[in-house]
Length: 377
Image (cartoon, rainbow, N blue to C red; front, top):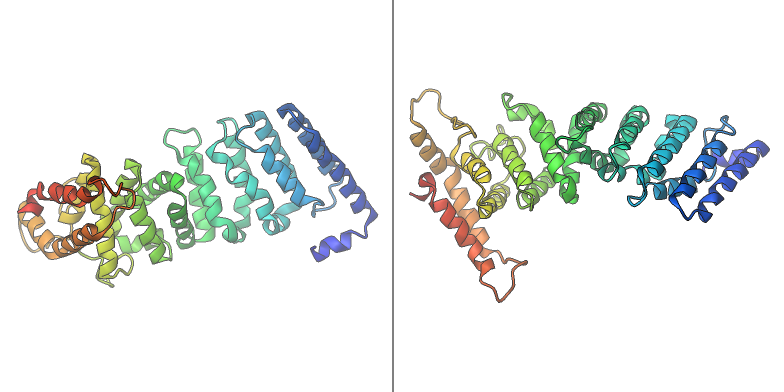
């Protein structure tokens, strides 16, 4: 028990306040319909507001548990909105000090909500985050990755809250520090497949293609190993859009002409790291998707998506064909060959041991590569 809470136990008015809240919480135990939950939340709101002199709430663990239960996906939006009203009453009462200390109590219910909330609920939830979470600034760090994971579902393209969620994430990145923010974002990409699409979209949307990658190094976070793992997993994601966004990130941040140069690369990469990434990227050929193939070949041949040359010598006037041949021979060929050897040596754990499909995957990749004249000749 917190020392301040122990001291308050000697205050008869605080004990009386605690009894009122405890009585209100008992109403939840007999709630059997969603309408009962709205009524119980209304009684809890009155109990919370019955004495506004105490910023330390009694029974706050149970309060947090009941509110999280009221945000269950199976309940209607009316219950969710009433619960958010209770959260706001609590945050006004406790202030930033106690919200920072008890963040885990309230966030366990709030963070999963945006992904399944009705459209009427999402603006109210974002308002809570804007008013009460952002002012916590670096006090958010212990729960930053979970917070970002909870916000990313709001970046669904075409959603009414897309712009607002995007602006909230940008403000959050400035408040906690961009490198720390993106480190947590890549952590979400690694462990939460459901947010890989909005996370990769956020990165692709916000890097400036006309600015050197090293000047936007913060967008790769601070844990190089984590970024590499997240990148490779995402390149093998079942969603084509995730793969496409990750190939865009490869094109911008991980040019094969510079990635092994510690003075030029966006992050320090060993030869083994680069081969691992090339292996993961090559697997996208199995999708037979033109948008993926175009980005992969642009990365391997030193061009951009529009056909411009990357890392071309400004003192030489050469054709595109000469450039791609030189780039592939100089920067990509050896890495690609080793990546294909690694793929050939891999066992497809998902394939039926009696099926030949798993064994054909490497050869399908090689055939696709051989069909590209710049690579196959």
